[in-house]
Length: 157
Image (cartoon, rainbow, N blue to C red; front, side):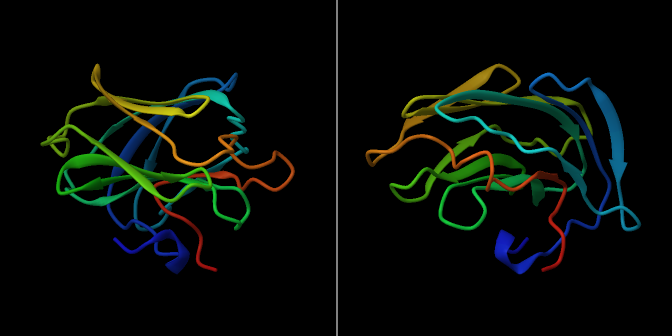
């Protein structure tokens, strides 16, 4: 899977259940006809939580992407060799948190990305890893410029 700036979408089945802030839970299927889904902005600011559930038999692919409109803040959640990897930048340079293995087993997996000031954590099925961001500014973008949240891929530029 290419980096998000190439606008490549994921072309295989991916089942997701997502809950963004106060939004209701619902499920959808992504495939070659519908390679991604788009949701309203996630403005985590200094504190915020995003949760989703997925199941797939593919070992690699983009699950979620959102950014600050192109400056430097972003969150990219993807499967890499059957492990879940959160790559993010809050202005102090990109950081990576990896959790889990064999997540392409066709079973549902619960994911949580949480932000608390300079601390960011990734949880998969109750296993959590955290990192502390570098830099001086830890807010994620600005609501007016943040992109929508893309699930399963991003639109071609």
